[in-house]
Length: 189
Image (cartoon, rainbow, N blue to C red):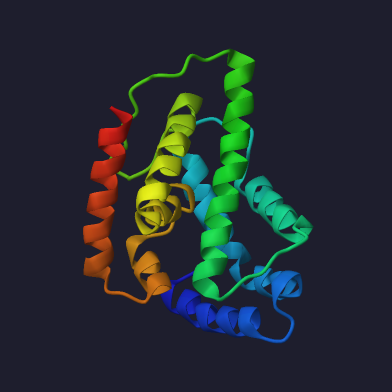
């Protein structure tokens, strides 16, 4: 999906999420509009991890299933929706790599580095688990930086898309992303 179509869909998404149906009913209306974008995000995210038994389609369908299964789903606009999607995708991936790590009996405590594409290596479960633990600590200190990392690393969103979701300039998100990367890199050393 090109960025112009994505921008148009964001307006429609906000209207649907804030409309009369809200919550779970809105998910059914919104999901077809964002399906291709979520699938592209999942594809970019999973492509960084090398071989994987989780496909982008499976990840997006699992995301939909989890959102639909939630009893108390309350979505408050596009930013909250994408934040929710990023968190659920992250949890799906974390659950997957925990299972993979348990199967391989991996040992934690390995140095994790973010690559040039600002993403973790899904082929190494300890990386994902270490980032998950670091995010929990960061979230208690600076929730916005933690969300930016979730959007970028687990949600696969570009900085331009994150800026749009927050309603701020690209430059501001770029500065916050630098701070987030520094904090995350320092915490993972």
